[in-house]
Structure formats: C-alpha cells, structure tokens
Amino acid sequence: MSAPVSRRLAAIVIADVVGYTRLMERDEEGTHARLKEIRALVIDTRIAAHVGRIISTAGDGMLVEFGSATAALRCAVEIQREMGTRNLGIAPDERIEFRVGINLGDIIIDGNDIAGEGVNVAARLETLAEPGGICISATVHEHAHEGLGAGFVDIGEQQVKNILRPIRVYRVTLGKDDQHANVATRSPPQQRSIRRRWLIAGIAVLGAMVVGVLLVLPYLKPAASPSAPSNSVAILPFTAPAGSPSEEQLADALTQDLTANLGRWRMARVASPGLAAAYKGKALDARAAGRELNVRYLVEGAIRPESDRVVVSIRLVDTSTGIQLWSDQNEVRKAAERGEREVLLLRSARRVRGALYATLRDDPNQPAAMKLLFRADAIDANSREGILKARQLYDEALRVQPDFELALIGRGFNAIAELEFDPGTDRDRLVEEALGFSARALAIDGRDADAWELRGAALGWQGRLDAAFEADAHSRQFDPTHDFNLRAWLLVMNGQANEALAVVERALSIDPRAISNYQLQKCWASLHLGRYDNAITACEKWRAADDQWFPPHVLLMAAYAQSGNSAKAAAEKAIVLQRVPGYSIARYQALWKSDSPAYNAQTEAHILSGLRKAGIPEQ
Image 1 (tube, rainbow, N blue to C red):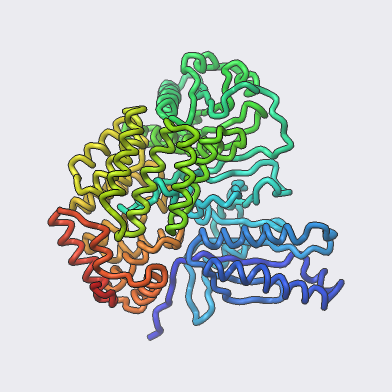
Image 2: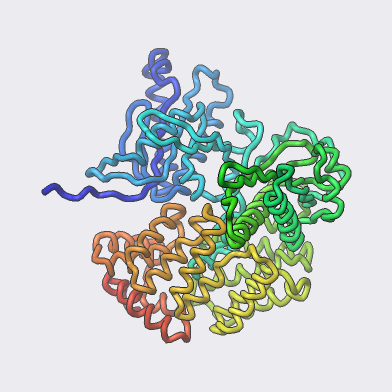
C-alpha cells in the first residue's frame, strides 16, 4: 500500500531571467558573474528576510516557497524594484531582468521538492509577466493586502498551457515608476493597521476590504474642479434598462444606499443627492460634472440583466482627469429575495468606501493631519516599536488638529494594540485610555460607528460584556456596513462560539473577498467548540495570507496537538517561542480573560489542554 501523498497550502514564486540564452551567448563569463552577484546581494537576502525556502535553481530561473502570499509578494516586489534601480544606465539589451509569477495554492511535498497544480499555475503566470514585472493569481490578489506602494491591474482570465481552467491574472504595478502602466491600483488600509488589528478573531485586524484603486501618473495634469475638496465625491444615479421596473428599483436603491452610507463617513464629503439626481438619464462628461458639482470624484453605476441574473457594475472616476480609478462588478439573481439584495447593497457600499480610502490615502494634497493619520494606519502592529511609532503619529495628528475624530479613534485602538501585544502592561490604564479617546470622539459625533466600535472594544477588555454588546449595536445601527469583528469577538468571550461562527459566515456573505479578515475568528471559535479540523483549515488560510503575527500560530499549535499531529504542533511551537520567548499558559490566560463559565470551560478543554500537549509550560 503506497504512502499517502503529503500536501499543504503554500505561496509559490517562480522567476526567470529574460533573454538568458542571448545574454550568455554575448558574454558567458560576465553574465554568470553578474547573476552570481545579484543572487548574493539581492535575491538570497530578500528571500531570507521573508522566510522563503529556495526549492530549486537553474542558470536562468528559481522556484521558491513562502508561508504566506503577503511574504511572497513583498519579496518579489522588493527584488524587482532593486533590479530596476540596478538597471538604470544599462543598455536595454544588456540588462538582467526577471519575469516573476506568484500563486497561492495546494502543493505536493516530495522530499525537498514540491509539485502539483499550485506550482504549475505559478509557472504559467511567470510566462505572462513582462520583463521586470510580476503576475499573480486571483488567490494571491485576495490574500496579499499589505501597503507595498504597488498596485494591481486585472488583466482578466487567461487560458494557459496544460491548465484546463482559465486563470484570473493580475499584473502588479510597482508604483509611480512602473514603466509599463498608465495607471496603478492601490490596496486599501492594511488589515493589520494598529487601530483595527486586534478585532479579527477576537484579537486583531481591521476588516479589510479587498479592493484596488487606479492612480494617475504624475504627468497627467488636473484640468477640472481645481477648487473641489480633495475628499469630495458625488454618487450619480445608477442606470438601468428602460422598461425594467425591477432593475430600475435596484438602481435607485443602490444610489440611495451608497449616498447615505458615504454621507455617514467622516472621511468623505458627499454632494447633495438632489444635485446629483439632476444627472439621471443624461450623457455624462466627468470633468464637466466635477466642475458643476464641485467634487473631485464621481461614483457611477449600471444595472445590466443577463439571463437569470442581474450584473451590477460600479466605477470611481477622477473628475480632474476623467480617468476611471477603480471598478467592481457583482451579480444577484433576478428572483433574489430581499435579504440577497440587502447583501448586495452592503457589499457595494463597503467596496466603494474602501476604494475611496485608498485613493485619498495616496493623494499628496491631503491636509497635514490626514497624512499623519494615513501613515499611522499603515504601520504593522507586530512589534512594540511599530505600536509606539504609530502612537507618535496619531499624537502628532492630534497636536495639529485636536478635534480630529479619526485620529482620536486611531489613538484609542493603538492603546488596545499595546495591551494585546503585552499582557504584562498596565491593563487598567490602557483600557481607560481607550475609553477616554472613544468618549472624546463620541462627544464630537455621537453617531460615529468607529467611535462606538472602539468603546465596545474597550468595554470588552474591561469585562463589561453587556455594555460592550450595546456599544456594538450602536455601531451597527449607525453604519450597517460596519465590520462584524467586534461582535464575533464578544460572542466568543461570552462563551457563544456557535453564534460567533454564524456572524463570521454572515460577514463572508457580504464580502466573500475578505477571506483573511475572518479566518482567524473562524479558527478561534471552531477551536473553542472542539472542531479541530475546521480550526486548522481556517488558521492555515490566515497564515497563508499573512503569517507575521504570532497568535494564529498559538491556535494552530493547540489545534494540531489536539488532532494528534505532534510534528506540526512542534513546528508551530518553535515559531511562537522564536517570536515570543518564554510564552506560557499563564500568558494566554492573562490576555484573554472572561467571567463567562462557558468561555473558560471551552478554553481549558480545547486551547490550554492543547498547548500543554504541545509542551507549553504553565509559567
């Protein structure tokens, strides 16, 4: 009987030297020496920094495995940028350039080698990349959200050799200097921004909306709406085919919902719906509309029926150039029930808001306080240094503008991030600090959903779960599109892991692209219920998206140990102890305290006993 095939999920990078044969024929020794130098000074150092594993190399190529899509993409972007710098001043036909393909998928483990469709897809992606470029699969695009200063251009589904199904492919643009792109997409706020990170899985993360935003190159000169505020936007009436009452009704509902939702968002100034309504049924000139409405951006949408479905297309347009910056498309059944259409409305609102956030973040004309806020939000909370650096930026933003509500909220979440990072800190002081910032924000606007979310989070850390649930209800009342992370965390802490799973599934139904936002939550709740295989699957998905944060490894260690996989439990233990020397049962208990008997019983039965099986000490 043959041994079972070993598989795992991994991010695969395949790189190839462009024109390798030509370069070797022209100067064999010189090319070999240059490649050796590049390997030593650029490639190997970047791979090591991002914890990649080199599987194989050839004269003109390389196969590398990474634990997460984020690590793989960050490594590739850094290498290609460095190569672009090194090639400055070198004649085009003498440059050493790489094509890179990245895929996140299932691989077969064969000793030190790997194989399978995950590798095959990465190889095909590499052939689609331009010299000096990177092509990634849709799975990488879904998981890699970090602010790399790069963007993504959807080049559609590609049929490639030896792969039966078409592959959805995105080309990575490397920022303003990307010579191949007229426009570049930017990702929204990094899911691990300090003011949101703890909320995912009861421990971290802003519910990140996986959207891209196309940025205009510097040489395009604004020609319209010069006086429009940089954060101003108008939601134009969505269009629908004449004589289709159902589609027309959906178009009106989407227009009203987006206008109301963005109108509640302090980051945007939304034009009067009455003024925007005047454009219904009219041919549109984006620049003229921008001047007339005095807005920098337009949101346009269209409803298109197709057989038994309705396709909803939305786009964001810069009125200063007339260029489309972002687009999105969703479908709903023609016979969809009210609940399905509500999900479509919520999903559209979340994605439009995310697109605007990313556009505003990259606008150099933002006020000083807003620039400081964006810089703080982008900092990863994986270290005390990162937390303190972000804190300094939030404090500086508040010195510039003391009543800056967004900075108050960010500063409050920063206090909670410090508490989550180190349970040995002054818990009471940090919680009171977070409550204080939420109170200041709510004094400015008592209907701000983010401020209520911050208050709910602080109350939850204080053990006042009833009050925390009430704050969460206020948050959702004032913004129905708000993330579900706080509620799911509170449910687990209250011993209601089943209910938490239902909340996560609801969140994923609203935005199925936001996979990594909720997988850690799903892992934690499943582990509390003793569903170890489900916990492992969810945590492995999180790890594939971003494995830099240590708590998922703690949960994986417990789940692996409980399921009898001692080897994998030992591997996760090594990662945890490397990142948090001296990690103990007491540390887990000190951080995640609750008065709920059900929570404590689940924690003891499934998490703490698993950690003990893995060899984690009590103290």
